[in-house]
Length: 83
Length: 147
Image 1: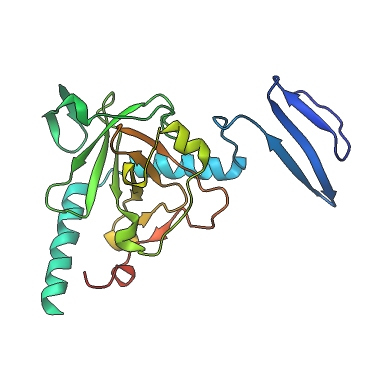
Image 2: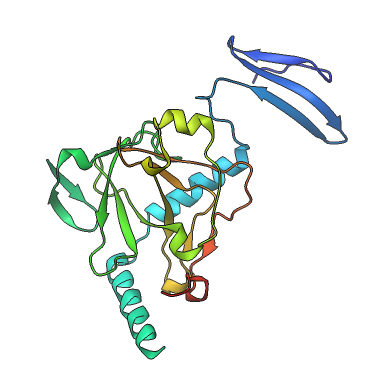
């Protein structure tokens, strides 16, 4: 990994059109500003990883989903008849 | 065209129903073509089936069915990416993580699927700035009134 030291209000460029700027340093937290073309997606890494994990979990269900959903629909219809 | 599906066996589908996901999905970047299929026996849910891979299919649903006040803005970036021109181009679905018992299933409100239904484009849109849960409950008490 490339390591660069930067001070407040200094930037780095990634390629010619992505700029990452140090906006503020407060204790163990820094504020970054990112200027990039609109087709570049920018996420907090842990959020992206959580979404990825959730997608994997949603895609790899081993239970009989069809039966479960049909059953849940039947239950719901029974519920609404009782209402 | 003929496709193999995870839940419904082999199907013959019309090519104009295929939805392009130019960026794939987080975790599945190489899957760029999907189709929405009806789920037999339960009209609330649909199946988002990969065209390329039989075993990749998500159960999806309208988030508004469970959370009627769910709302967020689309960034210019996703509007451009999906070539959205008017509000009526847009449909929103959420991926469901099915669990057993069914009442433990959750719906992903943090990263909805955005579709341009006219141009048949789709993308999972991660909401950076809106605080919705990745695992929102789907219990019946939260369903929209009048159901």
